[in-house]
Length: 76
Image (cartoon, rainbow, N blue to C red; front, side, top):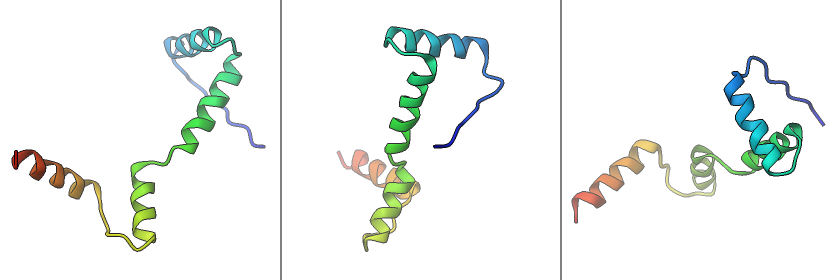
């Protein structure tokens, strides 16, 4: 397993995470470890769109999605 070290975290940000960890009954390290794993398991929009294209679906980008939403809203 690899290690990650984050430096220069603002005091207020550290305080917030430490408070949330304590409220969850965890150490700060354990709490952030779980958060990092959970975040990594959620694909980004770009990753999902790349999977769609890789599987033979249409090439869709953020601009096209915005355009489609605007067209849908305007049609109402």
